[in-house]
Image 1 (cartoon, helix red, strand yellow):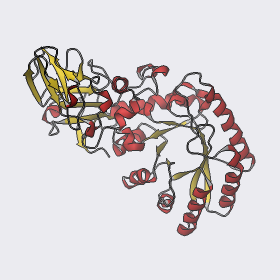
Image 2: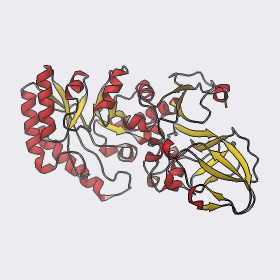
Image 3: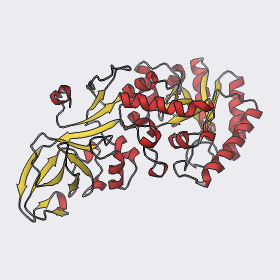
Image 4: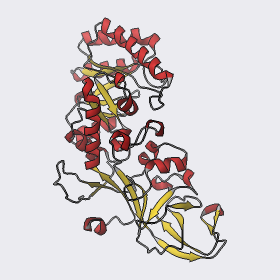
Amino acid sequence: MTADHQSSRHVRARAEIDLAALRANVRALRARVAPGGARLMTVVKSDAYGHGMVPVARAARAAGAAWLGTATPHEALALRAAGDEGPLMCWLWTPGDPWAAGIEAGLDMGVSALWALREVAEAARATGRTARVQLKADTGLGRNGCQPADWPELVGAALAAQAAGEVRITGLWSHFACADEPGHPSVGAQLDVFREMLAYAEKEGVEPEVRHIANSAAALTLPETHFDLVRAGIATYGIAPSPELGTAADFGLRPVMTLSASVALVKRVPEGHGVSYGHTYRTAGETTLGLVPLGYADGIPRHASGRGPVLIGGSGPWRRVAGRVAMDQFVVDLGGDVVQPGSRAVLFGPGDDGEPTAEDWAEAADTIAYEIVTRVSDRVPRVFLNEDATPEAGTPARPVEGGGS
């Protein structure tokens, strides 16, 4: 631990974001997709999966990410306001969203239906500028995107708007439902539908700059899906899309976030003492309890009550959440361990020092690791390590404290 770590004013809790690990992950993903000629989009939606959108975006660009992707236009516009000028796509639009601002910011905007095309074309006429749009095909996910039966109408309307100078069709894209399940038959079926919908649009005269369907799972395991661009989300943050595909280390990726807190209280209690709400946990004998000042308001899943793993003081066995996770705190049974208030409790990290990982917390909460990192709330300060793109070898991590955006 560096002196900067020890002197941090954020002693309650912190989420350390290792930007060197993030840059290395971006480079590893680029190397994986480059043989087929695809470029990499780093997805930074939801505050970069809880890691801090603006610092992560800058680190990803520095490591060679050709594109950035967000869900909402407000996220994309925030990136532009922070100075990002590269190719940037956002795809989750609702009626009345800021199409004109998106056009003026040079965003690539996902269009899945005629209502969206009408709104973006109207905004283009109002601004006197041409909108960049990417038509999304629903190839089987059944979420956003245009159904195959409606595709000819959407393509035809988009081409008419393009002929009028209102839009430029820059991309054709889709999204997999089960790419994280090896051998799932829907993957091949969706890929066939995507190729058919691409062929139709291109036959009608669409000349896209990019065609893309691959997410993290497909980027890592399905090179035939890479086309011109892959969208890497969770893999960027050093988390494997699913345990069935392998671990992050199997793909040369390293977890980026470490979540920790300072133990707030240590006390001895007698046998049979109830712990936390509902007394779902009672001590088996006289023991020591430690109070960790993180709770569900900080993003700690209440579903992990009684199961969430924690490494206390840098050594020893994992301790489990004793009883229920409360809004601001939870308790661990330390047994006979001697722990001082202020000792570091690590909930998850890369696992280098024996600490749990986000995947371990996902298992404890019956969820996925995506949710574990993304739900860490703004009440937990992000501390950005290794912001310099080319640190000297052997230089210790330099923490930079900041908010999560």
